[in-house]
Length: 333
Image (cartoon, rainbow, N blue to C red; front, side):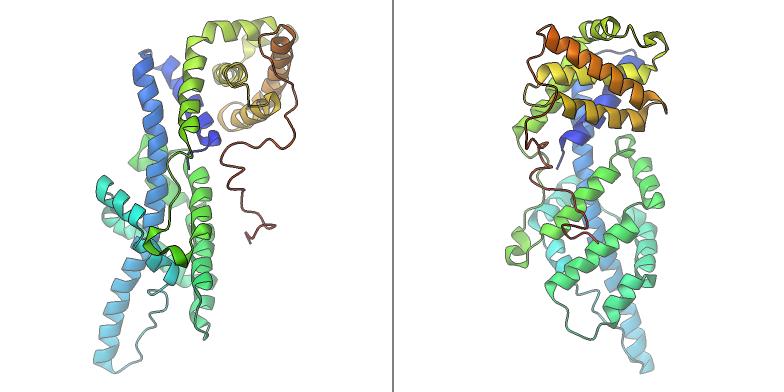
């Protein structure tokens, strides 16, 4: 689940922190990097378990309403939502149960958040249309319900974002990326797999974990050399006025260019220009784009990097090739 995009974000954050806090211990900083990445995987599992917690609360409220209806001789409430086929499979999932047991993670301390989300779900058009449908629901319809609920009410939920940020300093920038993987996980669920349905692994393979370590180490250990590259290629740029975060971002980008021969230079430049838009000043992305392009040409011309500027045809970042983004073309409404 932890992809290159998330790794780059964490390396930017941890590199900036490494220089700012004054305690420059490489070993501790690397441990913190890997810990911060593992926390993103925790968030992924917690968001999946949130679906289970919402349904359990719905069952609790349904039992109370059913008992009241029996006493009063009124019509009993529907249990359709409580018996959602996808949610039952998720609730029984071995990997999710193991995570909850090992991490001792529960939404019990945030039950008001769970109840508020349930209320919002019950008031939504998505829920009302689902409950009003007289036909027996298929597994696919039940799974699609939760995908729509997640996209509509759990993604871009400012209160939920604030709750995660309050719980951990490592979760302040993770949710957008993690949300996309939760949605993909929901879409991948197959009733034939039952409780053995595989969730996404923490890392796709050892290469991605090594990517995080190598990128961070190269950035720190070769800092002076990379900053010389910046100075030598900044004659047409006002390097002295560069924001400190811009220096950090370019330093990491140069480390990636120099350390990973299989990643095309244009891919690296594009990734760090996007990071500059998120983490630095309004004008930084254009400046960094120009600087990194100049640095890339310098590294190639001087033989320090043996790459072409343009990527080989068909290159795709790991994880993205395996699990393409959901769009209208591949089924995301």
